[in-house]
Image (tube, rainbow, N blue to C red; front, side, top):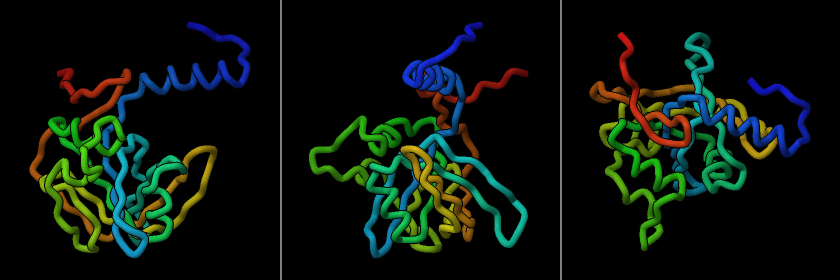
Length: 173
């Protein structure tokens, strides 16, 4: 175990190292509306509450992502839970893979969700949300969405990201 005083740069690097050890479900957050259609891969997604007027969830999107401004202006977004087999979809929306035509949405099949937000066809789950709250902290916008509609696909393994690589859950029983 390493505990020591840190400069800001050293603390940032250790933070990134520590966070690389977290296993996160990989999601593609999409939005469509007057401000355009955008999408981005995120691993910072979490349930906030199942109780209240509607269930709520939180996603964090980098402020330089075109999706951040589009979500703010469209006031809606969808959270698509990727299947273990969809690492290339994640890579397209994360900017690691690029198509010649620049259309990252062409990397998979899409359906319009009940509120018009783009859903990955056959996603494990897709949550259609109305934007309830937004705050920028550091480099990221924190978006809290109220779930208005939910699509549940066939069961399967989610794509996870840990130790700077993709994986899938493994049973320990």
